[in-house]
Length: 220
View 1: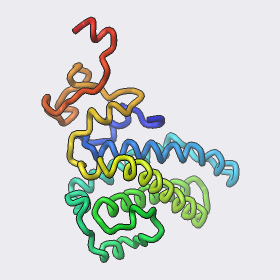
View 2: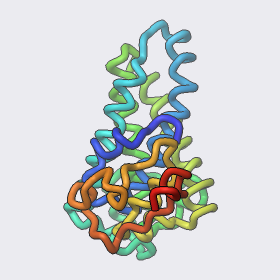
View 3: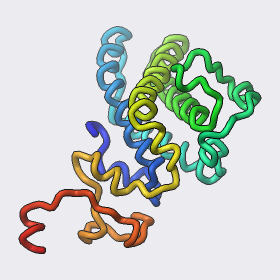
View 4: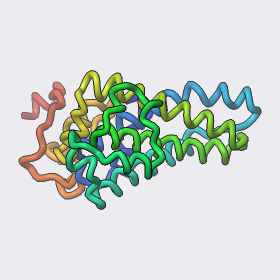
């Protein structure tokens, strides 16, 4: 991951770190890569200042709160990811499935969750662009384009490559899986870098995939 580090994840993702936490970390990092490329162009075109670190903070906080709310409310789309979602729920959420990537147009739980997640991302981006001085219609247009760009990234990576792995196994332990994706690995409880209590995991749930360093091999 390029823009999200281990300390930030442990600050915003409430334990336990699950496969759904992995989904958040990867998609937030993907969104930040897109924004890092787009923000300088927007600043030049609209003569404004868009503070990337502040947006990053707000995005991590908002998306972490989004999945925490889903957990607390036992979100139906996560309890039964491949189950059918009542079309009325799409109507109530003002979702027009025809504008989304083809794989997301099937009305089931995992697709509904992805669309709701991307919409939440679009909402926070819209508010931040508005606060940065962009006109409402411009901020709305850019946010709408961006949430669809994130949906396309999810379609290409989380759906076509991983077959909804993190969403279908959303309650499974994701700590060690996430650690392998990090440039700066997550602290490892087996190496006494963090407590099991802080991770929200038991000894049995940790499956460290980190390659041992030369020092580790000598010490062991």
